[in-house]
Length: 209
Image 1 (spheres, helix red, strand yellow):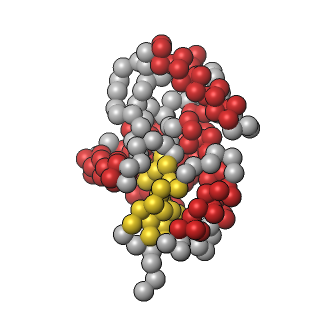
Image 2: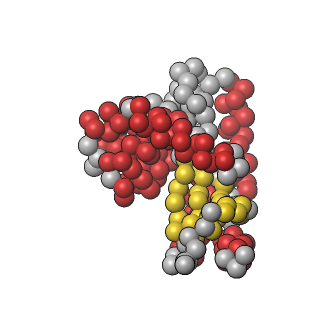
């Protein structure tokens, strides 16, 4: 019997380290083509909130962006976001948007993640706002009315709760995280933000476990 080989990528579309990791993750997926199935799992970084982000946290996150740029050369951020948007510490709406897009079109998951990240980090738009997320879905060609209904629907909220719980059971409580599922076992894969080779070698080595 063939053992299931699945690389699980635990992420949040508004996680800045996930944005920095994106190019390397895409190269890793290419390197594993034919070797393992890759699935994305939402980790749910920050719960719903209508409160403005405290100034101290805004300053801390801007420094995180700068640290990412030093750690991962070539990562772009539009710092106008902190001047022009109304930042909130709330990523669950963006997570639900990924689930809603996936339900409308199984092939739209990656496109919605991409749209959210580009809107946030390059265009200084706020994916904590439903209006931003609905506009992005429309741009992707999804049914805007159906998407808006699904965005905050009970089944979408429950799906996010389930994915967050699944991530926690695997010990993935920081993002991005990688877990390799072999049958019923889950193995951590250390994230390398700039080099595919260590992650690929770890994964291929685990195939022999």
